[in-house]
Image (cartoon, rainbow, N blue to C red; front, side, top):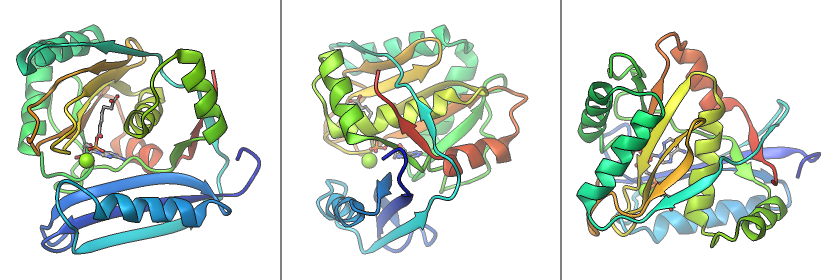
Length: 253
Ligand code: WAQ
Ligand code: MG
């Protein structure tokens, strides 16, 4: 894929109208694809949206844009896993990992409070790592990290070399976390799915890598989201531009 032309493929789907009209977010997805794989990748995204546990969409937007800028290559963050027995235990582990990444407890509490108020946001929220305030001004939309992928062969090699059981969801989340954490202004990320049947979440940062936590919520719970804690000196528009526009491919280890 490296020397071929690439296309950014993005999908977002909602029910009860478009996201802008206040519809409920169902599913989204972002890939970088070669021309050869374009139909397959786009079809996968359509299938994802129409077989989603959050409901059946009545709005779906699929966009395909040729990438003109050079692609940057990143090495995936190292992965580790905490098996917890309860949601409370999961939350304690997440808090500890966010602290290890350099955040104060108060800031974490404020950031996670904002996340709770933003469970209906279809992207991520950006939080000032000193004040704990939300600073992206994207309201219900949040920021969708786009133009990111992991070349199939490199991914398969990585799965073999790490002895981890590959799964599509972790593949995409690790790609996103690697892109986000590689920005110098990112202090840490916290995420758990808004899909009712997926309860594993993670904390990621340059300091601690990608740390999965087996249980962040109850099965059946449709709440979930993503939060990026950033340095106070961060220029938010250019940070968002990096997340949305810079093309990233993960390369093998
Ligand atoms: N950019 C920004 N935010 C996003 C993006 C994106 N590309 N995709 C999803 N989000 C936000 C959005 O608010 C969703 O509601 C929330 O994150 C969760 O998205 O190691 O599956 O795709 O086993 O449901 C993490 C653990 C799984 C994976 C996360 O998230 C593992 C997951 P979902
Ligand atoms: Mg989801």
